[in-house]
Length: 546
Image 1 (cartoon, rainbow, N blue to C red):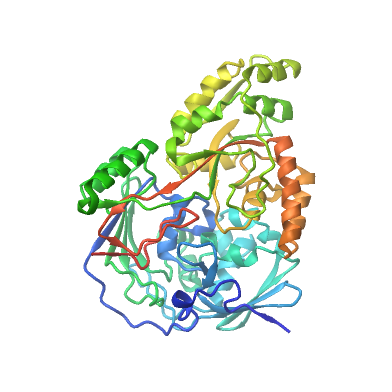
Image 2: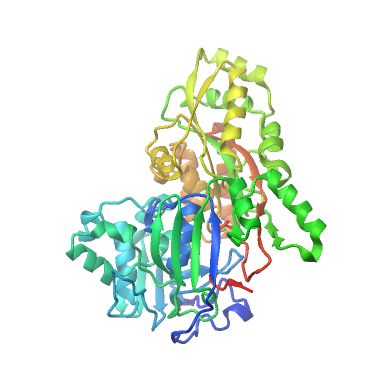
């Protein structure tokens, strides 16, 4: 007997009652209003499978849909392009029943001749899995998430059963499989559009001129300036439709400028305020009371900021050197100066305390520069000089990369380690870091799907050393545990395995956990329907301006 998964994981009645039975939408007129979002950086492109950061995923979530979606503001999932799905008794075969009547975007560079169907699903995932397929050869690209989470290794084949049924056959059990498919990298592309690009020798345009089925249609993009989208009048999801005719990402890297633009109503939603701005805005909103034109919802952060050590570089390959560097960082001082009232110190675990299987018993080494110096001396490490990469953008896990880097630089100088601070534009930063050009790197993570594997596997697994494992750390005793955990659906067993893995992490210290932060989202009081995401995404479907 198959396990029907129509709404197995989540069925919130009001929102989802119609989710699996939404009729094809007729074209509607949208309110003639423009919503401007002050974002923190430029997306690296519009091909979600290639991308890994929230800066990239926010536009992707506007343009595309996945088979499965996260419930707005929650970690549970709900049907999207798949109306329902079945799982075989051995948990290795997933059959997705697709929604009919879903239309791809019509743009000035593409006019679809058919609706979304199973061929689009197969194309999307085959392209990530098969280097030999014609489109992948015409436009060689890497798909880090697909690889990092083991899907490259775990998916045996994808079968088109009929135009509206597609089957994924796995080689082994993959416990977070459904949660993974709700993530942005799994956004469904148009095979018809891809075929057109391939025939015209323009395959690369799939990342530059996107075509999706989502609530907003791509119009134009100017790097470091603006991304312009139009509301999709033909959007299939009448429960979460676009409610503005235009959506603009005003790319504004300076946090102070974002707040000033918000106050002048030049944008209606701003992201990642500085801790000092948070306190000032709170006071301002409170003092103005009902007359305030701003509001600032908040949510406990599902994130972790850390310093990654490239273990492929000497002497960072030695655990005692990593322990010394960690011990020399005054994390409490960083918490106070960088995070302010919006942060909490990590206990040393490689995930936040709100993640199930979090090991609360891990204890981070105390700040002790003398002991750190003695460790280096014992290891025979003298005159150590390394690069320390500082993030150029604000992220939920790090409100001020430059300041944090400068503080760590000063801390390491006290133990005789010279750190040369390096930075790049965000897209270049990530690209070079994945190539392993760094010694030490400021980075972090906001959970993407609510599963521990999204932390331990993606950030620390052997499969991801060319992706989001910025420490380039492949340690078999650790990797065996997380792979074993991935292959069982029993949560108690998985928790035990993940706890053991976290203990190994704390001993080996491929990165130094620093802090978690609270998510704040300043916005105009005119904004209605915006839900804070536990994954720090910014979704504008169903968001209106009054």
